[in-house]
Structures are given as structure tokens and as C-alpha cells.
Image (cartoon, rainbow over all chains, first blue to last red; front, side, top):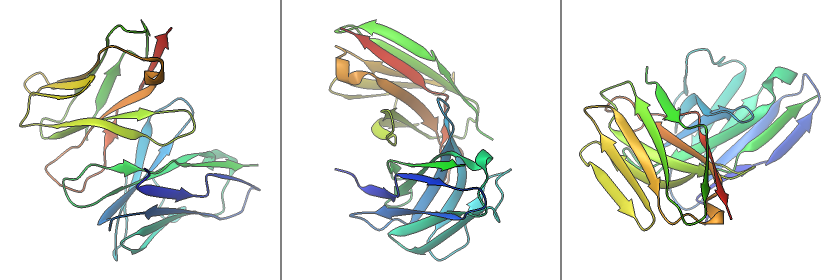
Length: 115
Length: 114
């Protein structure tokens, strides 16, 4: 069964809106969570690494003020896309690990569509 | 940073035949190589992984081989079935850090012909 839950699965909203996506580890405490972005028929690109209780580490080219990440507990990380625009439309996927050197388990993603 | 190349982009095989997907990586410090299966509209599901201290790993119909010298690794699926149809991604984790993100290949769309 799923070990990582992501919510919502689909969001459609107007340009300028801020959107929050939740990622939960269901049966384990995730020391680290990751956020990826996937364009249609393309690969997953790592956006940021999120550790509980500390600031996220963003990959080069990812705007930290645009994509706010909060990892308030060992089972929940959130990604907020602020003032979203059509170019932010994408499939956002989170993953979590039980500990260092453990496999990453992915959620089912959030399809974000900005009109 | 790490760069992962994956081939082929599309692979069509007859049901019951074997499928092989190949990946190369650039960072010799990478030490962890997972393979994921992604179905339409879903997140990637881990199907098998291998670490750099192992040359081959098998799990029923799925096997992965790793050649550290050549910096390439391959996924082998035997006795393919219709439910194997999906997009498969290889990935590598650079550096020795235990909690680093993954660098993915571009994916292979595997089509199993009945």
C-alpha cells in the first residue's frame, strides 16, 4: 500500500493564486522529504530537499520565494506555489525517506493547472 | 552535478519476451541506483535498486546489473506481461550523502504487445 500520501491530486486555479500541496508519510517518520517537478512526458527534476525543522535546500534555478517549503513535522511537508502563473502548471511529486541511505518512496503527485 | 542518460526512449516487445533498458551516469561518486515504474497519472514506484558494492541484483522477473568501471547500469525484465507496460526511470544518487535527491534519466516507455 501507499506509504506516501499527497494532497490534493489535482488543482485548477486562476493566475495569481497561491496553492499549497501536502505530502505525508503514512507509516513512518520521514527525516527528509523531496519535491520534484515533472513536465508532460519528461523526467522528474529535483526542486528541493526538505529536512524537518530546518530550511529547505533548493536546487539551482528554483526560486525559493516562489516555491515555499515547510517541513513542520516528521510526517508532513508542504509546498506552496505562490502567485502561480500558467508557466507553473506541472506535475509536482514528493518523496520521503525513512532515514539516510533508505529508498525514496513517492506520492502520487499533484497535477497543477493555472488558467 | 550528476547526469543520467537512459536508452531507449521507447521499447516495444512481444509479451513473454525480455526487455532491457540501459542507463549511464557521469559522477563516479554515485553509489545508489534505483529503478522506478510510473503508470499514467501516478507517482513513480520503486521496483528494484542496487548499490555500488553489488554487481547484480534480482527479484523474480526483474534484475539490475551495475558496471561501476563503465558507469552504466541496466534493467532486465524477463517473461514480460501486459501489466509491465509503463514508463520506467533509472536514477542515480550523487555523492556519498545518505539523504540526497535523485537524478533521473529521461524515461523509457515500455510497451508490451499482446
